[in-house]
Amino acid sequence: MVVGESDPTSDSVSNAREALLFALHNSDGALDAVAQLGRSCVELLPIDGASISLMTDTDRRETLYASDEVVAKIEALQFSLGEGPCFEAVRTRRPVLVADLRAATITTWPVFAAEMVGQPVGAIFAFPLIRGVISFGAMDLYREESGWLSTADVAIALQVVDIVTLALLGMRPSTSDAVWWTDLPANRTQVHQATGMLIAALDISADHALARLRGYAFATGRLVDDVADDLVARRIDPLALDQP
Image (cartoon, rainbow, N blue to C red; front, side, top):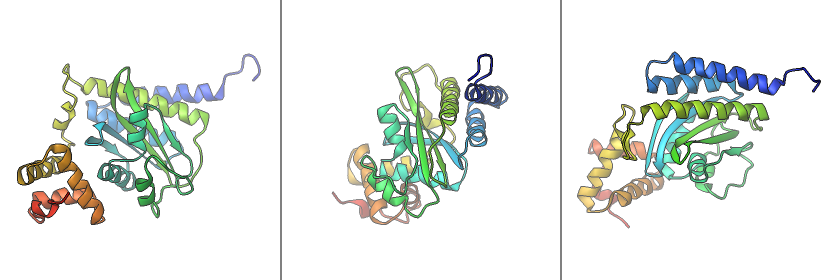
C-alpha cells in the first residue's frame, strides 16, 4: 500500500462500526437494539441470515433474533440436539468458521452436521458473545453458498459481536443470577413448562427432564420445541417419555 493511502479493509470496518453504532443509538430498547444489529449484520456481510442467542449452557438458550426461517431452524435444531457451532463457540470462547458445511468432517457436532444435509446452508460461522469473564451467548451466520469470509468480513463480524455484547450488557441487571434472561418476552415458555411437567410426573432432575425431551424429539424426528408444545397441550402424556 502506498504511504498516505487509506487501507480499504480498515475503512470498511470503520464504516461498518459507524453504521452499527447508529443502529444501536437509534433503537427502541435493548431487544430492539439486538434486532437492529442483527439486520445490519446481514446487510453488511456476504451472508444470507443471522441469529443472536443468549445461553449459559446446552440447557439454557434463548434466541433473541433470527433473520429468517432457515436460521431459525438452525437455532431450533442446535437446541434440540444440545450441540452445534454456537455451543462450540461459547465453550471454546473462539469463533467457529466452517466454509463448506456439506464437505466438512465435523467431530465436535456430527449429529447436527448430519441433520443439516439437504438444508440450504453451504457455510456457517459462529461467534461467541463475551465480555471479560462474562459469556452471554453466540451469533450464528450462514449463507447458502460455501466459501470463506474475507479478513474484512471477519473484522466486521467481530465489530457486530462487540456492539451486540454492549447492548446485552445494558439488558443485564446487577445480579449474579445466571439465567436472568428467562423472564424476557422471547423466552421458550413451552420448553420450561414441559420440563417442569416431566420433573413432576417422572420425579427426575431438570437436567434429566431436558435430556428426555431431547431424546424423544430425536427418536421421533422432531424438534424439542414441538414436543414441548404437545406436552403442554396434553397431546403427549409425560409417561410416554418415561424411559432411561
